[in-house]
Length: 288
Ligand code: SNW
Image: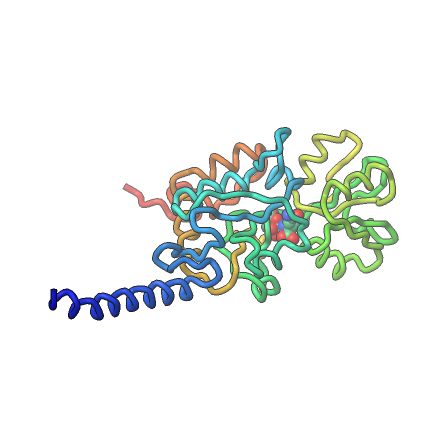
């Protein structure tokens, strides 16, 4: 009996100590309230990857007839998240203009939307390594008389707010009137109804609108190879960045990237740098 009473205070101390440890672990996990051990990638909700994306950027990221997100970027990210075992992706459509801020503010874990990596954007968010490098395209009507970017002076050109196209047009098309839209569908409606003369957007998205509307054509393609698309994440999360990069390079090396590229961008020139190393012609193949 005496022993038991003597042990009691020690038991209380142990309980208090472990409660303190739990509290310390919670605060280390940040707003999520989970420990780094339980939530190594600092996700908003461990086990789920909240992805900010776009519903109308076909074939990169878009919603199908049943409202499910699909497209090259969606399928690539889903593969990468699975490989890295970081959690189940849940995609949400956003306006492009608010997407990077929403990632920076931890409303989402990742931004996936053919987002070009630039120094300017790196002030707000971190990026994975690049996974796509292509063109910015001038989409217009066959009747417009616009044959190249040189014909844009005096014309009304649509851009989606916050895109590289907007920044490029401000700098390089000073004689055009820019009309800012929240998304591609709104801009292409305006193009089809004649309230703008062209819309400036990503190459593959333009190609898919040309396939959908026979009155439209691709008038010019401007290389954007210096701003390859990457996955955007909040700053200061190296564990997530490293896990995404490792899985991304595995998806490139085992041919998954190539398979998805051929599925979503049939007939488009294949950027070699993302192919398995053995298929890159720039890498000298050892002679026997
Ligand atoms: O810079 C290009 C890249 O080379 C590749 O072609 C994929 O698109 C880009 O990342 C440019 N994308 C635009 C941007 O980052 C528009 C994104 C969008 O409309 N979803 O602003």
